[in-house]
Length: 138
Image (cartoon, rainbow, N blue to C red; front, side, top):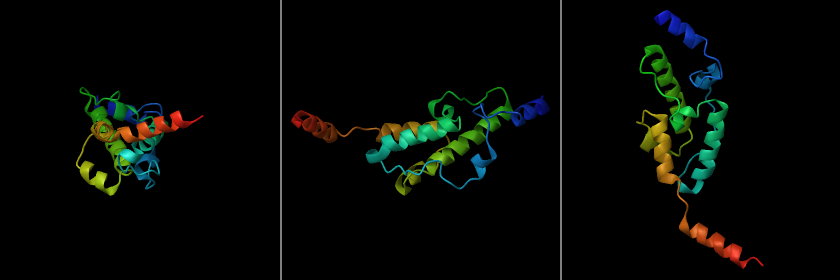
């Protein structure tokens, strides 16, 4: 059974979220060029991250649809490896202050949700200011 599963992992294709391209684990280039600073750039950062993870077929690690196997140790190990890669991509795009607060996290999904809960805020002043500008347009 173990050999069959190992062969299965070796034969994962690019359409499988558990597939890792060799460049996914060797490149020192950040997955996106934007560093998350906080509320002021969360929306741009998260949209950029969603696009980048989508191109690598790894959205399931931040939306919870790609889950760790409970029945196959080899697939569970591959899930752990992919989760770690996604987590490292995310951590590499955080400002130093935010990085220090997330470095001991072990789940890409948890980090994604924590960052969303903390920084996906719309500033009330910004909304008020936009409404004022719209109302003043004639």
